[in-house]
Image (cartoon, rainbow, N blue to C red; front, side):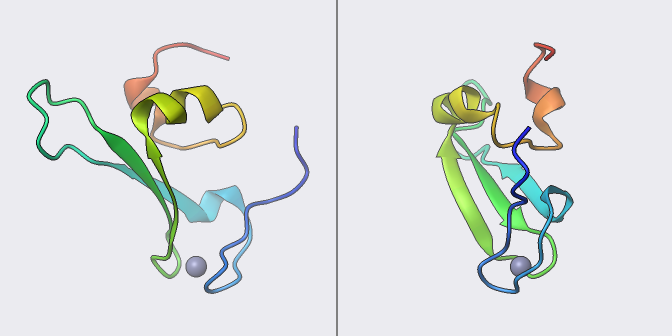
Length: 75
Ligand SMILES: [Zn+2]
């Protein structure tokens, strides 16, 4: 486990619990999200935007609460 908590560059809050995710459902014929937006739930600063396939590859180091809605694999 990494011991470095994510830190918001805008308001300075630390901790993965303050980073929320939203998925884009815009303009998709399959209703699949194109990308995920990771943002600070304290100030709304956008921390990262990841295309869906990149999100899947990097999800081991970026933990997102809504992941279980879309990823059925368990760690
Ligand atoms: Zn913030």
